Length: 248
Image 1 (cartoon, rainbow, N blue to C red):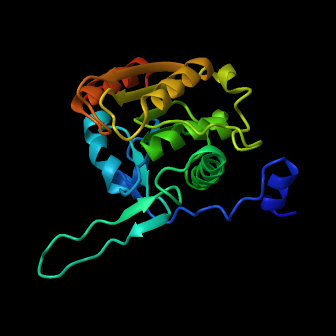
Image 2: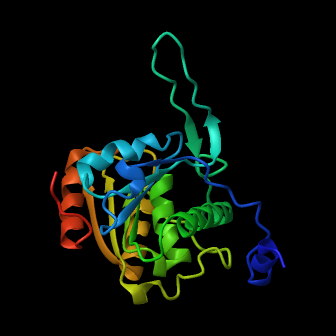
């Protein structure tokens, strides 16, 4: 029986083929320089690429390994330029549209999270702790990984992301047992976010409070972006949960 057929048997509506992760940027040593520490799994937002979150890891946890994944949907291919000019960065997305909603978001979040979880299964030793960190779309997926496979992830970091509604049966199969794991989650956003409606941010925080060991904060003057204040709070949270040393 195919996996698609199995999903249908479990009550999940027919899904398009799962996306495939093909491009990954690792930290030094191919992501194996500090194998006794948790590995960060970096998930960028819409229109960005794998270099985005990789660039900020030096502000967050420079002595941990990371694997920064490129979303599989191409918005703009990376292009090399001659004459010593820098390459034109590629732009990618986890979802087929910028902001799916309702049942479409459930299906797209499930498909993307399954692809990411499969990549982890194939490339990260089972005994190694993994901490997904994502911005916007990537933040939603960092949370959704807990909703499909909570046993695998030590903690999760959601920066300015939201939440799939979970109304389509089978697209968030671990929701009814997630609270039992008390997984630490760091969820932050800007009070001036003009991309995500405030009610969605509030609803996400409320859901995470019920289902995870949540730390949350919002920031005055911050839009749909990240800030050094966020990074400082995140470093303290990582230290508290023995995920990183807190040393820069």
